[in-house]
Length: 504
Image 1 (cartoon, rainbow, N blue to C red):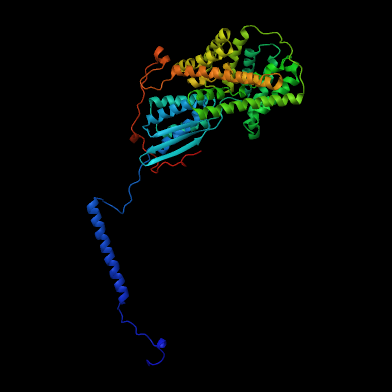
Image 2: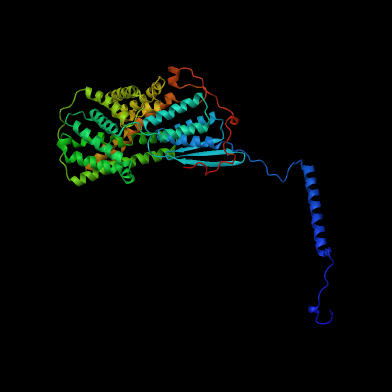
């Protein structure tokens, strides 16, 4: 082939077989030299620092608290809120439970609507929360939960096992039939009527209105819209029936039927716990509970106002009919205990103990009313109810103190006096609004102060010290399980706890 012609058309000579271009050889030599230098540098660093494996990642660090224990603490917290405990008391129980499992790095911030859990160690901190439902647990659920807590004081089951039992308690079906709940609220309403206004002609009205309100409560459990407007609907419907048929239902005194009929909707426990939390320094929880209780009270009064506006002007009440004897309030306490146990599904064999706490509270309240007035009676009732319920739970087959104490709110009726005052403000143009507000606050504070003092007689925060009640009547000695080391309860998940784990 000729080599003449244009330069770009000339054929280039091909390299001999097996020959490597000079550029590639230089690149390979540079890479090999760089690898040798890297190996020398690694050996140099390992020799000086004493490290063993730089290329292997460090082993994952275990979280300070296992995910299973966190799930247990969150679920237990929201169930304690649903049982009617104050936020300070819930925090004490959670701290004690975490300490028994050796978790000292956990801190709690309890609100009426949720529980915040903060875990902190040398790596930093993480916050988790679980929202709480505003519904109150049934008495049988509260009893099962506190029996489980008592078992945890003497044994120490794995957190997963306790969580499963708590979830089973929440998912348990109501043991009381629907018809028995209806009858229970009728009996409860009649019992409250015998305490507040024991007249013969009003008994029929108590029974009818108690049945109507309980039907509304059952319907509200199925329809969300009705549950939101339940206080207004119940107040309006009770007013329409009581004032629309004053002689047939109320015996001419329809205004006396309002309080017993809507007693199941009164925010007595909410207002009392709110006042206690404000007194003990839980400002956020106490303010929220107080506002929520007052809001529900005003909604009930607004429903009464709607019913009265629909009916138009009403004549004044007729003089009371024939009053029943001195035995009527005593019989009313019995009916309150029976009705409340049916309506709220009290645990078996607990009726006797509920009645015992109710009668002791009733006697203290009546003594205070006769010696110093209604406010002193409310204070003494709250003061006596708490230690009595605490002493009752130490007997065999007796329910926990919280179960025995809750029906006592029906005796004290903290929201009843407030609703009466608000109703007077709505229906009576000449009522003094400032005096009404002061009466409401004083009534709630009297009961809250009594409950707070009574709780102080049985609770102590200092280790190694006994409460006043235990000092006077020491309980039976029981062997408790001390707090265990964290290694006994290994974490179920090796990843660090984050704020997104276990939310509900």
